Amino acid sequence: MATLLLKKSYQLSNLKEVIFKDLWGSRGVFTTMRMIGKPPKLILFKPHIENLLKSTKKYGIIKKNLKNIIIYLINKNTLYKGPDNLFRIALNKKLISVSIRKRPKPKTNFNLLLLRYKRVEPNYKNLYYKKILAKLSKVDSTKFDVALVANDKILETGTSNLVFVKNGKIFSPKKNCYYGNTLKFICKKIKINFKDISIKSIHDYEEIILIGSGKGVTSVSNINDLRWKRRSTKCYTKLNKIYNFLV
Image (tube, rainbow, N blue to C red; front, side):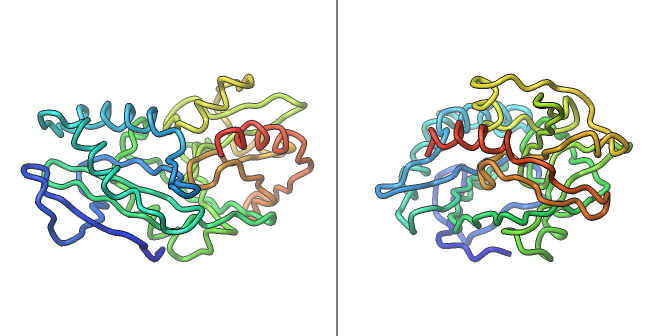
């Protein structure tokens, strides 16, 4: 697992600092934002907070002035730890935890591994990630991510949304995955078609691209389990240019 550059937990009831817990596996929610520059800037801060608050209602995390509390703790802990990091905030009914870790920069020979698994309640960024984290902990995150597969449909990765390019058109899975903030931003700039992506059709696509807070826009080189290889980077170049307006 990644080394944390900052890690703090607070009791939700009174904001008293307590021993840090990452909260993975508990009934709760989280969001991860890319943190760049000096002073640090959190990318897509507003939509991340809006989605986080929406998810707290689903998971019964109720506290007066919760939005103000979340923003206060983020501001209190947004400290410079290098030029490019990831800031995570997680909540359950008892605790709020914040952490910072260095952002692993994806390499050009980026690979996907298959994991036959669908996240619990995938429309929400919940904390039921232990199976995914167990798989990710065994690989170099600059070179690998895991593509989640259920009923022979590719859904998302352990960290990101996926888009697939066929004859210049861009597609992304339409269900059983989280619709992330970075993907939402890019959808405002370029047309993305949402449809089921089956394993059987994978060779129809010349490009596969990850889109997310941690991965940014990352072109997949290979999926060895499916004998798929990248045949173009044209769309990746276009999407990466769009994404770079944020950073």
